[in-house]
Figure: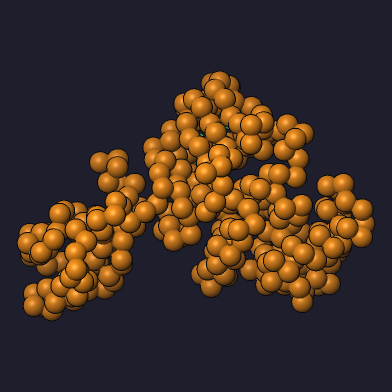
Length: 302
Ligand SMILES: Nc1ncnc2c1ncn2[C@@H]1O[C@H](COP(=O)(O)OP(=O)(O)OP(=O)(O)O)[C@@H](O)[C@H]1O
């Protein structure tokens, strides 16, 4: 597995304000990486460090064996800020061609490259349109296309779906998933649940500290999770679930929600669980195969 980014004891102060504290992680080439955490956690600071806009107060940050900001990384790493805007006065192709020329391509190569990235994001039919003629989701696609110019190996997307309605947000997530062969994406978000299906790895920051760095998984090979959300509160739910065959642990993750850890066996556990709900007269709202990202983090911290 190829290591793209390595952070060793990275600390960043702004004056006396500690923004990142002794952060260590490695990111390998591959599936998108989620960078999650509440407001002020240090996500933007980490993006700024990776782009070489600011430098660590102490520690080492390496991107493909270079220091961030090094000229060797030009065109290999790109970043899309949350509020990235296109100029309303020019067509999409005009603007992307201009950006591609700024990367050193000739005008004809730049146009070719712009058409390539617009095709990747499904905007081939909209190249001559101006941003205001496009939907929110299409504009976001166009800015993602801009980030893909020159085929960078790492693409940082800050809050890629912020401000989009659920349909457009889902479209963007699907697009990123499709584009994962093109580049390794690092996606920041406040919303843990939106990234869990998309990402292969999470970095969870809280008050400047990396509280979680792990591969998202269903657990070890014979350890499985299912998350059951009931329609209302019932008596003795944990006790009854724990008595089911193969159950190792039951965690009441939030009101009316239970994360059940069970051992993989020949029997279909979800059928057994639904039969139990039926016998007990419990109405369920949702049954999710797996452990939500939020719960994975919760389990580790508590
Ligand atoms: N230029 C700066 N000068 C002083 N303090 C800063 C600066 N940039 C960030 N900080 C502080 O560092 C901490 C981390 O901020 P950062 O913007 O990285 O968090 P974030 O996780 O991106 O938050 P949000 O989700 O709100 O964008 C915050 O306490 C913030 O106030």
